[in-house]
Length: 260
Length: 260
Picture 1 (tube, one colour):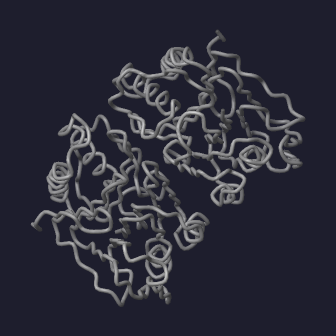
Picture 2: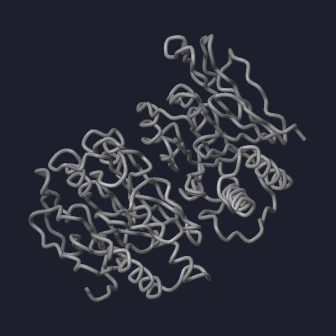
Picture 3: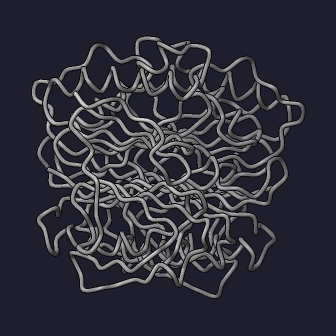
């Protein structure tokens, strides 16, 4: 199993604090040693840093912690290999282009005997069930919306329907973003927190670090952080119910289907 | 105009020496200050580091220089913006997936009034003529070879034909790789050198650094380095004639069409 981290904001924000705690789980406080990755949207562009070293030892992870890249949408993943060897092509997040936008995806869970129908436009490069699921999500979007990017409710409906089909094969917690919206699908465990005015202090679970958000924010800032397991021990995180796909925009949960 | 750097080898090799000289041209010895990027294949996977800061100032470039990532195929680019603003989505190399393989592309040149036919499967995310050209190359490959990755001669023929069509719009020096082969298309200026046994010393043009390859190689190593302008001043580089697409494999030029 793996661990997920996502962030969606209304102003470009760095993820250094959350990533500091999260990356400890990649070989420090937890066993997810089989690579890690983090993708940042900056405008329509994106950067995807991936590495097969444990996040606690990776020079690239060190850079990410030291270099405050500001972004509206971030997805990170630390891996404990289940399906697929420890190779770069099996390392999340995965990136593809659809409708002139990059899409970024990371998954936590196991899909048993998941062999999706023939994929033509999006083919997996690596061996993971996760990348197959990502390709199927994009193929369904492309097939059902041949005119290009649909409205958000239509996008949400197609993603919900496809996610439900895939989730029949096992646990399918995932985070997906097209640079504007961030979609978080709960299957077994995925929680989020929204930080907004009035801000307070937060203390990491995985490392004895406290940040006082009052010192680094303005009254208008809104930041949603999504993670497999809560990253802080003095804030109240909301569990995403199984079968629910929550859409985040501008740092707030916008729409979600009812849990199944 | 921009500058290109590529490397193709028969054993995984780091590009630290060449990149040390090349990156000086990104705001140091030359004027290419508008971002830079470098993509490495590692097996079927790839890492793409892009940044809008000048390569001489970028913390990410610093990481690339200090962290010897070993790869069989590398493409790097430093940008002087002509078409498209200084934004991450306009920064080369560009990456797409086709036939279950990543493809990496970087371009040097200007294409005037280049508006390719409607692109459905590969759409540009940014504003550059370069990304449009990349999308057209991939679209032609996909359309002409619906059965998947063709033989190398067939791949070479399709790329040659499409490159010639695009080059009618201006200068079209590019480097492209699918992780196995590296394709270098000469239009105005692009040169390469092959280093193999017996190895000697090389001295950078852009920084007073000499490396003795005898100390860091074995007799079997073969490394081809491709660059807009020669990176060393004591070796003999070969100019790729205009209209020629050279394929590199295992560190050697394998096939090329005749120059037009």
